[in-house]
Image 1: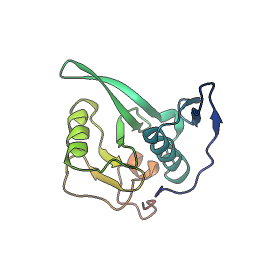
Image 2: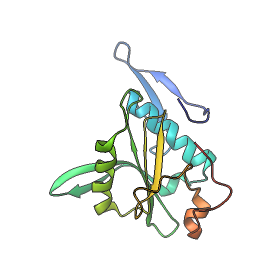
Image 3: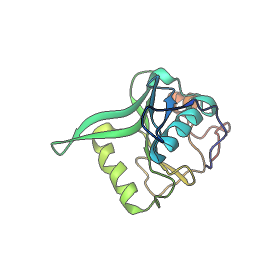
Image 4: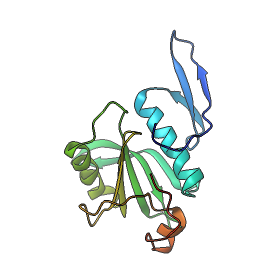
Length: 158
């Protein structure tokens, strides 16, 4: 994992070889599959290193896209409740390519986040939604996004 170390709470499930990890936003244990491993690590990164309040983060946020029910992995909102960052999480073995970028861009037509990010836990890409070719070398911290100044010098790098 190419994210800062974080304290994960993991427990065994009733089914053989099943494990569960505690989601700090949903405040519950969820089945530990590769994509969930990435999502929970990234949530810890957003909360601990980037300063996003858990109360302003939605996990698996439901919305309609072209008449179909969809879910955004992570959507962080600013203090006014406006989506500031949407994150698409993939399993570590999934190569991030154009399909992932197209997926999050399509979803953002509905969600309207100011910044988009795609991660598989090993590689991370973040960009302003209005400048898809302008990759950033960091995730904008909550205070900078809330203040409308993502060019802050205090951005956590990935």
